[in-house]
Structures are given as structure tokens and as C-alpha cells.
Length: 219
Image (tube, rainbow, N blue to C red; front, top):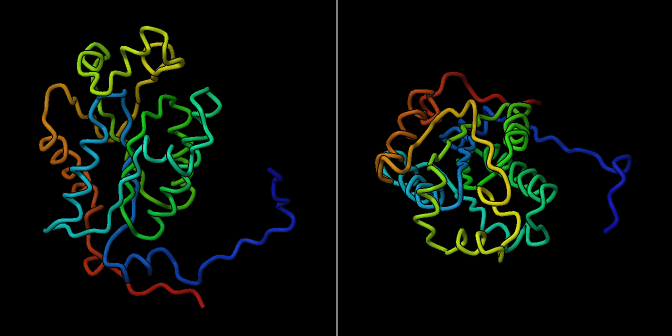
């Protein structure tokens, strides 16, 4: 694949500022980044969170970006080497930032095992002035292996799957996640309530009409 020459590209900024878009869409855009071991409950919690945000009383635009699903399309060319894992997260961070910039709530559920990659995703949002909320779905490896709904840990232990997080590849636990959900101790409903509580406390569930200021459109 031939790479693009940046000298031949021109970035076209929108005359509509993000604050103005937020007012027009009546909500704030952000990314909620769920990270944790396979079988920790990320996808289940992400699905329930998406439903809660779409439903009354919130009625926000929200969309879930699932780690497995993305590998069927956008990232179907990537494997599970450290380099491919980093590229996997870089791509989804860019996609999530686009959703957040459009004033949607992007909910990502990816193992995203490396701190450096998660920090890259956070920094990308920070540079664009977009909120980024890291949620650690914390489940001990022993419990994740006991659950093993897809039989992946068993395959990894037998050597059938190489470079499997927690078995033959590392998982670097978050050190500064905004929310920590101990999924072995709380149910899905409690996990969603905890995440929503954090968002509300940070003013991230504020509707556009409740925000201060007028329409900020550059001319």
C-alpha cells in the first residue's frame, strides 16, 4: 500500500466549532474507554451503558465500538503482535475521537493491554479538547479463566492461541483510570450506575441547552 505524501494534503477545518456543535446537538461528546482482561465483562457492561445513555432520561447519542467487532472490518488486517495491538488501539482511538467530536458518546470495549497505548488514546483526545474517561473493568485473571465464556483461555493454555493477554502476553493494569469497576464483586447494573455517576459528577451528561454561552461559529 502506497503511503500518502503529507505535502500533498490539506486539512480542511470546519467553520463550526466543537462548542457550537455541542449546543446544536444538545449534548457533549466524549469517549468512554473500557479496558480489562478477556472475559472481564467489558462488552456486556458497554452494551448496557450504551442502552442506558440512549434511553430516558439521558436520551444521548451513543455508539459502542467493540474490540472483536472492529477486527471483522476496519482492523481485519491486524494480528496480535505488540506492533499490531498498538496499531489496533491507534486506529480505534482516532475513530472514537471522531465520534466524540461529532458530539456522540463513543464507548470502546477493548482489552488495550498496554498503558502506553491507552495514554496515546487519551493524549489524542486531550489535543482535540475532547473528554476521555478510562474505565478499568477489573477482574482477577483466575476469575477470568474460570468464566472463559469463549474457551479462549483454555486454548491459550494449550498453546493453540499465541500471544494471548494474561497468559502469554502482558496486561498492564491502569494506574490512573477515572473509574474502576470490580466486575467480580458488582453486577452489570451496578457497574453502569457507577459509570453514569462519574459522568454526572463531571458534568458530562449535561444537555446542550443547559450549557452556558451562545453559538460559537467562526466566520
